[in-house]
Image (tube, rainbow, N blue to C red):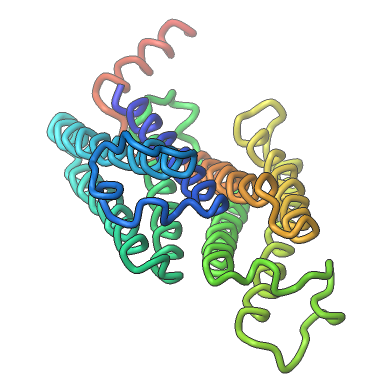
Length: 314
């Protein structure tokens, strides 16, 4: 049951990240210049426009919901730690709560500082890290069969870990680029101002180019991961499906990145650009966790079920 609650918490965080991107992309970040209220009201009633609804009733309310979920999860992990004699779960619960609280405080500072670029970027970076931790906890908590505890080939583990790190780095670069207003620092594609690496340009232009280069690395890594899956993984397995989903998501991500530039940061492509990036991170990170096999020792109940299943087969 706790693994399902962890997955639900991760889903709420995922939606919150997308909502945050939508708030930023619709210039609704400062429609409520105070925090946690809006124009002096905890629950604004008068003159509620679309921006106020999006920022306060959707984004902030969902953030508050996530905070409550993190407290419940922390308590649930503490109880599970006592039952399974796994004290590390207590630490994970505290870390998740701390990260989500920090993300909330960064959101507050972002508003009060009138959209500090570093606070906005750190907020998305920590949210992505928290999402990865929740996905890890889901795999650690879920009941699995004895066959699912077998680790996959070493190069699958390494390739998926490297790609997950690349995707995370790409999301951090994208966050800094977006919040510094460098999304249109290069208007031509695939070159930038007529060359691969233009000289005598400001930092934001180099940041934009670096984001593109890492995007290419992510795409090439996804191709390599799919090729490794073809060689090392059995057809029809969850791991193989995750591996083949990676290049499809990477192609979609690159396409949305190009559309974001050619449409001069139109709302749909740049919002979906972040959405697909988060999906890609979850995909390759889940593959890595699957490839590692057992993330914890089986509980007594799981050992009993496994032995019963083996006896039934015999």
